[in-house]
Each structure stands twice: as C-alpha cells, then as structure tokens.
Length: 250
Image 1: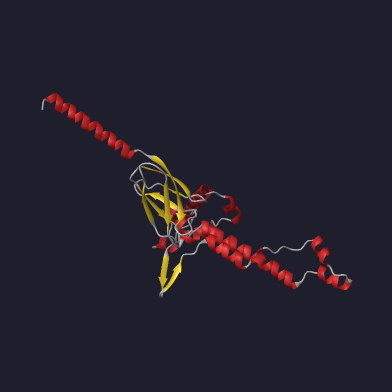
Image 2 (image 1 turned 60 degrees about the vertical axis):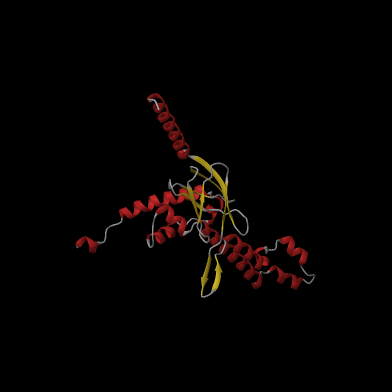
C-alpha cells in the first residue's frame, strides 16, 4: 500500500471515529412517562437520575418527565414504596417506564407499600357520609321544620350530634391534608436535595415543614426550589450557632 493510500485510510478512520464519539456524546432531551405497573396510571414525584451525568429530575403530576442524556445512558427511577428501576435511553423515541410496588414480607405476612391516591379514595369511600356532610342552611331548616312551634325551636338550636359530625368531618379533611403534605414532602426527597441525615434531617423537615395550601398549588419545581432555598437558610443559621462550650474548653 502506497503512502498516499495509507494516509487516506488513516484520515478516513479518524473522521469515522470522531463522528462516532460525537454521536455517542450528543446530549438529547429525553421525554417519557413513568407509571404504576398494576394500575397503568402515571406516577408523580418519581426521582429520575442519569447515572452517568448525575443530573436528575422529578416526574410531573401525570407521570411525564424530561431529562438530558445520551443514547445508551442508564436512567435510575426511584420512588418511596416502589422497587428501584433502571432503563437505558434509546437512540430515538420516548420512554415508557413501569414501576412495581415494593412488597415486604414480615412474619410471613405480605404487606404492599401504601399509595396516597388509593388510601385517599378508600378513606373517602368509607367515610363518604361525613365528607359529603354540609351544615344545613336557613332554607334547609325552614323546609324541614315541623308545624309544632316548640319542636321547631329545638331544630334551630345546634344539636350535640350535629356538632360531633361537623367536628369529625373537619378531622378527616385535616388528616387527608396532612397525608398529602407527607406524601410530597418526604424524607427521601429532602435527603436527596440536602444530603442531610438524622437528626439534622429531622430538625430541618420540622422547621421548614410546608403548608397544605402551598403544596396544593406548587409544582415539583416550586417544591424543589423551596427545599433548596430553605436549606441555604438552614446552613447559615447552623453556622451562626455557638460551638459547644465544653468542647471549646477542651
């Protein structure tokens, strides 16, 4: 083989190798959906991380997600109550990932991880009459008043049973709101964002516990930004705390 042909062969191989490397390293925005394997419904707040770049995101309320990566990269999907899942980014097309509930076996008793949406529906079905109960208005009372004036007067005075029903309804609603907050603002998510461990993690979560009103309208980005900003404030306050006097003497 002449020198000119050899040189041409080396140039062609180098260009092909360089082009292949650029294709492999090309970052694309991968879209997809992550869903429950049994219910085939989208899963919100699933943590999705590219194991090569260490970049991550969270799935939206309907399970949709967008993450940067290259074909061949491995994505890790994690969510409290579900088995960890690994999927490889395809060359083209969107991804559909199904996650299965984690099953625990305690003393030969199979326990499935609970789901906030299922629990909420079950609770509402069991206590439907209390959730649907509303305090009777003036027109409702007038429609049902008996003709006897004495008996009618007793209907206008708040009864103990009605007060108990209203109180129980309020308790149920409050309980469901607290479950919703715990579902979105959970230790696994906060630990991933802050790298804190107990007892510092517990102190942080209690001090910066978000309200139901905030989380009801907050997007996943809003929540992550809230945790990030709160953590910056938390670190500053921790740095200003006086050191242990005993340790200082020693």
